[in-house]
Structure formats: structure tokens, C-alpha cells
Length: 315
Image (cartoon, rainbow, N blue to C red; front, side, top):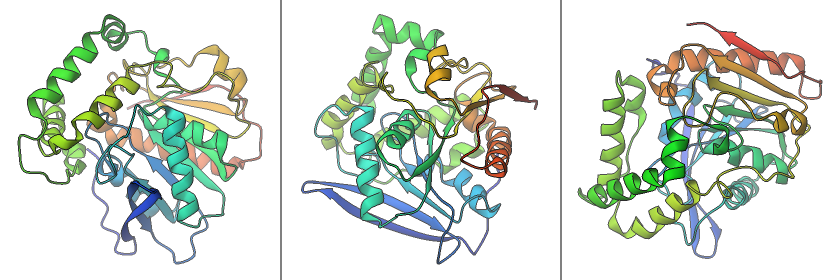
């Protein structure tokens, strides 16, 4: 379990920002200094029904320990308090949303782009189109879903995953009065069953008017050509990956091609992380490894060459 942070110096501001004539994004900004020097944008995953509360608790830890003095937590379009998706969104579409958001927030400084699960490829793609991004951090994530080869890939390839997710959405969407879902209790969960319960609660509280948006998100997530990084993208900035040693969704072995495309790539493998959901169930361990990785990267400096290798941190 990852403890809550009770630092009164961390101020919170929420905004709804229009990024297109008919589209807006809901964003929470955590800030500990009126003149932030170390900023990050942290992009949530979670599939249909997620929002920024999936990653707010670990973000508060990062500010509390001085890694950043500002972290921007957006709800991806189609999730949380942001506008529904108007069509199937690719990783690049979401990255453009994030760049517009940073522009409209008036940020002109170097920024760390972080992403958990599906937010990881978006963070990488944001770095490819936005020169403000000085490093990328992938948490329980990888550049593409095609990295995995376990049960998740079997379900994806056979179409069973799409069927399961479609049935789940149809059964639960809009079953309870609409309300913004707080996923923070996921960090206190002790079993996968508790995590599923929280996810289903989020679906039930999501208005039925989001049904088409959910379908677009589902189609994009299950389309490997849409749910990964373009093969032409190369990043000459630090790319840090924190991954469970047996992540069945994103895979724990980075495809060899990425070692060439990300010359400053460095992996930290979380020993004892046997399922993707351990990013919540073993959140304290993931946070320990994340903080170790950031400490080493910040000490080395963003312009230094980092060789690709794996560091293992035991539970």
C-alpha cells in the first residue's frame, strides 16, 4: 500500500480548458512553489472510465520528496471530466491534446513527460512533437502493446478482449447517477477483486451519453496500429521505463528496435511485479523504484549519455 501524502504546501488547482472549439480537457495542477522550476505532466491510463485520480497519489509523493514542484494531471479526452471522443483517437491524437494543453497553460520550460499504462506511448509521442519534453518516464508501460506475448495478447488477437470489454460497458455504463469517480482508493486495495470493483463503479457512474466515446476508445486501444508509437520516431532524450518483471499487458522485454531508437533508454524492472495491476497492489514498491530511477537520472543530467541496461530492485 502506498501511504497518502499530507503535505499542506502542495496546492491544488483544477481547470477546464478549451483545446478546440467543441472540446475541453479537465486538468488538476499540483504545485508546491509559486515559481516552479521542475515540472512534469503525468498521463493516466486505465482504459475506459479512467481519470487523473489513478495517478494523483504517487504524484503527490514526487512533489513531497522534491523531484518536481509542479505536476500537471490531465484527464485524457474521453475520460473523467474531459470531453467525449469525437472519433477513434490514436496515440498521436492524444499527444496533440497534451501539447495544446501545455501551450494553453503557458508553460515554456523543460518538462518531464510521464505516463502509466496507456499513458506511456502518449508521453513518448508527446516528446516526439514537443521540444519542451526533456525526458520520458514509462510506469507499467511500454512504447506499444505489441510488446506483450501473454494472455492479454491472446485475448487481443482472438477478439475475446474486445467482446469482454464491450459486454462490460453495455452491462454497467450509466447504471448509477453520474458522478466523477475517485480512483484513489485503488492504492489501498489488497486484491484484484477490489480493483475491478472500483473500475465497475466508475463505469456505472459514467453517463450513457459517453457510450460512443467509449466505443472509440476501445477500438483505438485494441488496434495495435493506433495503440503504439510510430515506427519512425526516435528520441535522443532519457527514456526511463519502470516495469514489473512479468507485466502481462505491456510485456517486460522491450523490443530490440527500441534500444536503437532510444539511445538513452534505461529500464528498471520491479522484481515481484507479476501482473499489470501490481502498479496499484504493490504501489509502494513501484514508487520506490520510480523515485530511484528519477534520482539517478536527475543526478546524471538530461544531456548525458545513458547506456541501455536493466536494474532490478527486489521487494
